[in-house]
Structures are given as C-alpha cells and as structure tokens.
Image 1 (tube, rainbow, N blue to C red):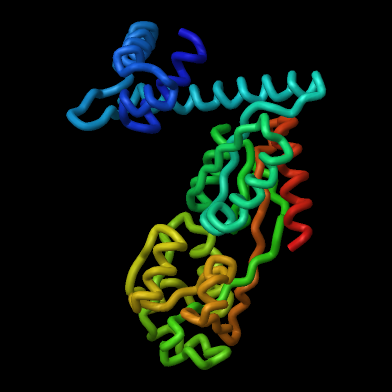
Image 2: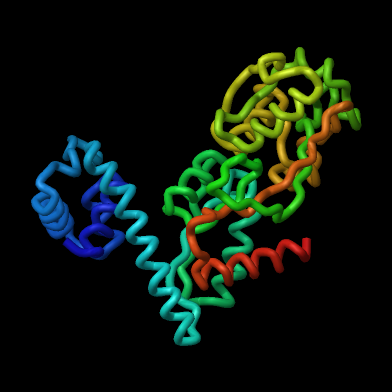
Amino acid sequence: MDLWHLNIFCKVVEHRSFSKAGETAYLSQPTVSSHIRDLESYFDCRLIDRLSKEAVPTKAGELLYSYAKKLMSLHDEMKSALSEFQGIIKGSLVIGGSTIPGEYILPRIVGAFTKIYPDVKVSLVIGDTEKIINETLSGILEAGVVGAKKKDKRIHQEILIADEMRLIVPADHKWGKKKSIGLKMLLSEPFIIRERGSGTLKSIEQNLNATGYGIDDLNISAQMGSTEAVRQGIKHKAGVSILSTIAVEGDLKEGSLKALAIEGLNLKRSFYLTRNRQRSISPICNAFILHMKNELSRR
C-alpha cells in the first residue's frame, strides 16, 4: 500500500464510481479496480460495495477514507514546507467556505491567488457552517471561512469581513416599497429558512432569541439547503427570507428584489477565518490567508 493507492481510493469514494475516478487520475477502470483490490487485500476487509450504478464505501471504507484524507493533506503540507524551504510556493491547498463566502467571496480571491501563484492548485469545498468547521477539525480542510462563531477550544476564529443581512422580498411584494417593517409583521408572513447547520439560520435564530422570539414563531413555508435555493424561492413567491445582501447584490441593483430592515432586529454579522488550533499553517495556506486579507481590505 502507498499514498497513490489511497489517493485512488479517495477518488472512488468521492465520485462513487470506478470509471469517473479513473478519468480524474488518467487510469483505466480495470487499473482502478486493481488498486482497490490491493487495498482490500492489504487491510483484509471489503472497502467498497460495488452496487449496480455506483460504488459505495462500506463502514470500513468510510473509516479508511477519513484517515486517508488526513494523510493526503499531511503529504501536501510536507511538500509545501519543502518547497518553501527551497524558496518556491507550489503544491495544493484545500480550503472551505460556508455558502455566502464559498459562493460569492472566495472564488474571486482564489482566482487572483492562482494568478500570483500558478504552481498552486486550490480546491474549494462549499457547505454549511457546521460541515466546514467539522472538516477543518478533522484535517480535511486546512482552513475555512464561515458565517457563525463556534464555542470550541479546538478551533481558532478571527473576523475577516463584516456582513449585513436584510429581509429580502420580491419587488412586487406588499412590502416592496417599504424601507423597514416591524418584527411582529414578519411573524405571520410565509418565511423560507435554511437547513440546520447553516450559519445564516444560526444568526437569525440568535437575533430572534435576543428579542424573546424563536425560529418556531415564524410562519415557515419552506426549508432549503442553500442560499441560491432560498433566493430562487423568494423570486418564485415561496416566501420571504433573511439573506446576506452579498448574495442578492445583482438582484437589488436590477430591482427584482428589495431589501428591508426589521425594526428591533440587529442583522449584522461577521464572516470568520476558521482554523484547527492543533494544526500548523502550511506555507501555501499562510500565503493564501495573507492574500485573502489584503483582497478583503480593498472592499
């Protein structure tokens, strides 16, 4: 067994397909299958169930995958450190972002970074805040940017950028010409919420709790798993919602959506750079963080 075998195994798990894993590694499907059999022979257990349409990790496979990703990450960190010792920044970096920073902020920063460091391959994982924090703690991600602060001694968080949320409604909504509404007015209006684990939902919940209300006091019409889904839901009259203005900037400029304040509700929050305290920062990650802070300071 070697790192190459583990790398192929991880690709099979991530793509749930031997053929797709082979395509990404420029290997034939029989070669990929041979690598997986070698691993199963080495560990003396089945790692992948070959179902009719997909390859699914067994419980043992899931366990191996979690450790394999840590090993691959440590391997990349080692290569990065040796490159820096030689005066070169090259290698790979895996970072994460919750929905707003992951979809609307980090792609631009990654693009600018890779122009400066063309020998660096950056992988951006997008998920809710809980997923990004958990994968940062597990070592899958070297750093993440999330929209909620978490009380956990294992992680280090620092404010990167301020964010402003607003009540977002269609332009032709009954509140479309208002600048603000009272909180009690909102409670009876059909409202779209994000899924549990979302930083946006957590921020809304904290702000409601501060006024003596909770999520259950809202007239929830739908729950959606991404900011983009909520945005589309608002446009198609499934309900109103509270979103970051960053996510609907274009809609607000063109006038298809309107943003309102909610009287008595503080809708300001921050996005946090999140790292595992027990993990040293690789040279590539350090260069990326410095670049990111510089880019965000220009906003």
